[in-house]
Structures are given as C-alpha cells and as structure tokens.
Image 1 (cartoon, helix red, strand yellow):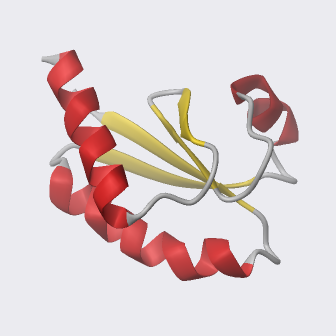
Image 2: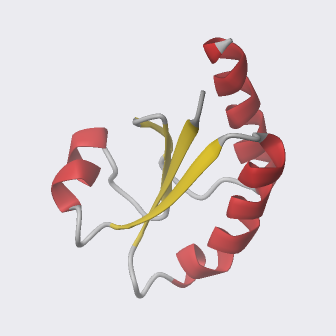
Length: 88
C-alpha cells in the first residue's frame, strides 16, 4: 500500500522551502512505498480548504490534515509510522 504525503506550501514561503527537502527525505527513509506531493496552495485552494489547511506549511497524510504547522522530521516520521501501522 502506498502512503500519500502532501506538503501544502506557497511560492513565497521561506519556511516551506527550507523544510521541504528535509521532510521529504525523512518521509522517504521511513516508508518504502510513499507518494510525495508538493501542493502550491494558490493553485489548489479548494482542496486545501476541504482538508482544513489554514496556515502554511501544512502536511496531509492519505488525505487527512496531520500537521497544520511545520513538523520536525522526527514528528513526520512518527506520524508516518503510526499511519503505516494502522494500514497493516
């Protein structure tokens, strides 16, 4: 089963740019079958609102908002491990 991770960001967000590489690496090291997607919130505003994204950066896992603010790589790893254990 593939775990879908979505990072909601905006083009001018310095926090988003600084975090995306470390968070993506943490996610890929934690789960073997992962789909990483970076979403420009201005291009997919309706989807972001549907999930409840109010601040950036935010992260959704399998279509559910998990972090409404920037997590650490370890917090993301922990959330992905919990998600993977719920799936199996």
